[in-house]
Length: 72
Image (cartoon, rainbow, N blue to C red; front, side):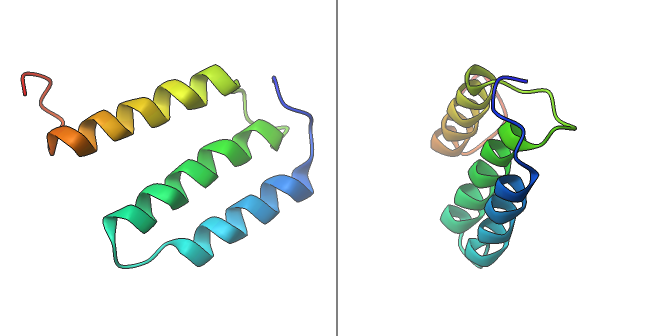
C-alpha cells in the first residue's frame, strides 16, 4: 500500500462520504472520490495515489460523455 495505514482516517473519510452523498450526481461523485481516497489508509486495501487518479479521471470522462460507451 502506498499510503500510511491509518484505519481511523479511512473511517473518517468514509463517514464524510456518507454525509455528502445525496440527491445530486455531483454529491455522489464527491462521495465516490472520498471512498477511493480512504482506500489509501485502509490496511486491507491495495491502492496507490496513481490508481486513484486514474479512477477519478475515468469517472470524470464518463460523466463528461454521459455514457460508458467509449465511442462517444
